Length: 70
Image 1 (tube, rainbow, N blue to C red):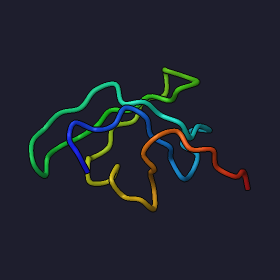
Image 2 (tube, rainbow, N blue to C red; image 1 turned 90 degrees about the horizontal axis):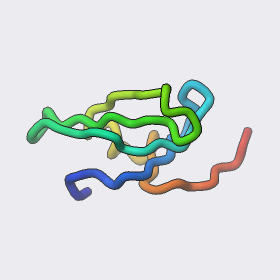
Image 3 (cartoon, rainbow, N blue to C red; image 1 turned 180 degrees about the vertical axis):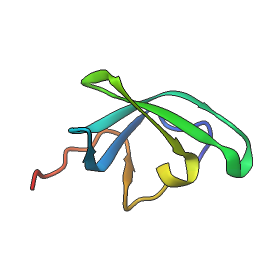
């Protein structure tokens, strides 16, 4: 996957009630890369993830994807 990261991401599970996030900041080199995300509908919700975790398809999908609610 390319660096710098895509701007839009969808979490496969709700995080603090939200699934759609936007990259607001990123940094680091190599294995130390990280990404700061904010929820689209509430910019007070911010999460910092390692680049490796964000690339995990079981947890995250690139872009804003409509997901079925359980």
